[in-house]
Image (tube, rainbow, N blue to C red; front, side, top):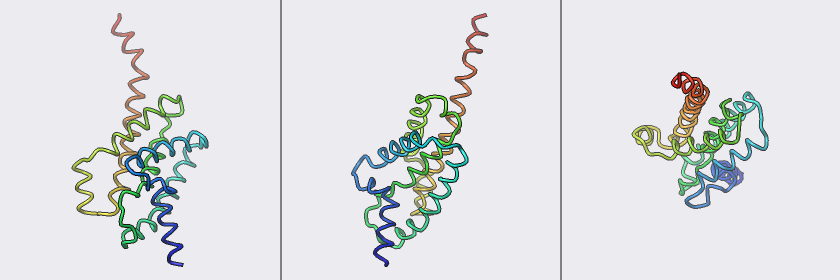
Length: 164
């Protein structure tokens, strides 16, 4: 029974085996998450429900990882899926494919950067730092998208005012 539980923990954390692909697993997870979003195109409340359910599924799988089942820490890509869905839950992206691409780009840049916050998380809460970092990147990417969208909305008015 324990081997079955460990197998499901590996499946969850590696996002159905994508985490075993070297060097591209995080980006590939982000792209597949966006494709899932485009195909399903759920309303906001269902996406937030999926995020909560994903976190609740991830917690016991990550506890298995903490207990030392996994030796390869690079397979842990499920938080990228959660962070991508958090980014894509922003109402800004419903307007066009370009906004979806911008949101994926912003999330990828924010989640792949090594910051002081990331180093602090790794020292304080070792195995949960990936989830917290990707959730934070998803929230910040949503804020950046709203700022970019607000600037895009007011730009014709500002340019029209400057021409007068």
